[in-house]
Length: 426
Ligand code: LLP
Image (cartoon, rainbow, N blue to C red; front, side):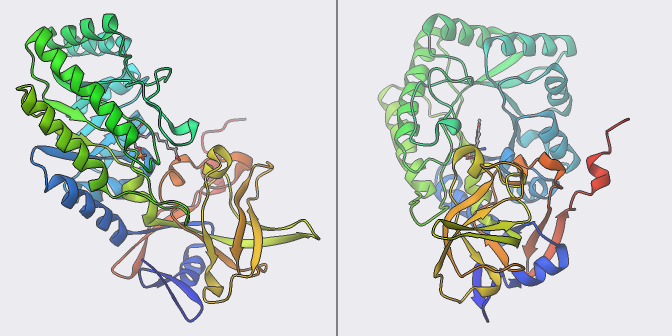
């Protein structure tokens, strides 16, 4: 995806300098080829290898009309978590039969929207939602497939802010027997539902399989208990997402098969030992599909050298277009795109332009000595950058382009100042 030629960085054959000239900076740039390679890994290591499976793209990582269309063409499902994501999918004409709906506080408006569009399944996150959804189904005479999101009470080795499986998590139904089993029975017996089974999502940017495998054991016991207590075969199990990617040289991400093979082997073994039918299995990766397919381009502005202390190179974006460093201490690697072959003999902090001291995109970046006007390319910014972008300091949300067949295509226009005040009144 990234190559250098004549001291310039190229993305899938397109010069980063030409991209910046044509579309301006800051700019989100995506490689369609890389997205497809990531989808292919999921196909080869999961979908084609194991029958009775599907993969849904967790579109919170980068939710745009373009992605919905691409995922549809590629035959994938998508996972939405809000009316806005669902609206985007609907506008992209994404087939309802391949949409799942997650989220811990779906509003009535969102649930009705999902039922009206006919989303294939709703992942019920808590007790109140179950009763609320049942009432909406009864009122509209609709029946919906549901899974229960379970809090498996496992910890995961990632930033505390992106772990989701712990007992004290806001997500999911707790394992307490007096809550969970009556709820399972209720879901099985309700005329409003077809109860499919269980879902977990243990955390994000995971670089080992420990928490997935511990959570799986919880689900296996639940499958067996559901059979023993209610004579009901669980039809579906969703392992969530969370598969980590490489941001810097210190990350050693696993492949999809490293996660999936032990899960599928253990599931098969448990089902055959206990005379259970192996359920349909699904996953919901977001970052794995889109994270390393994106880079961001920034123009370097002011440079501040504090003698004997450090050098700051400021860029024309920052925590408004990528809040991950400020929020999670996330680390990124970058290069100066117009000096791509030159020795990296400087160490600088790349700072954003927001009025916040935490607006530092990269600390201690080893790069060529930066100068005002240089173009900085930050790698692996495809996930949770654009989707978490905001207008703090009334900074405009950048444009997004996608490269396919060595051509760049605008898929999101740069926000205008007018756009920003569109809904404001004096
Ligand atoms: N399924 C559910 C129910 C989720 O909550 C998430 C992510 C995913 C799937 C996809 O996770 P992934 O494969 O992308 O790790 N903003 C944070 C990440 C928050 C993830 C929240 N849930 C970040 O920038 O690291």
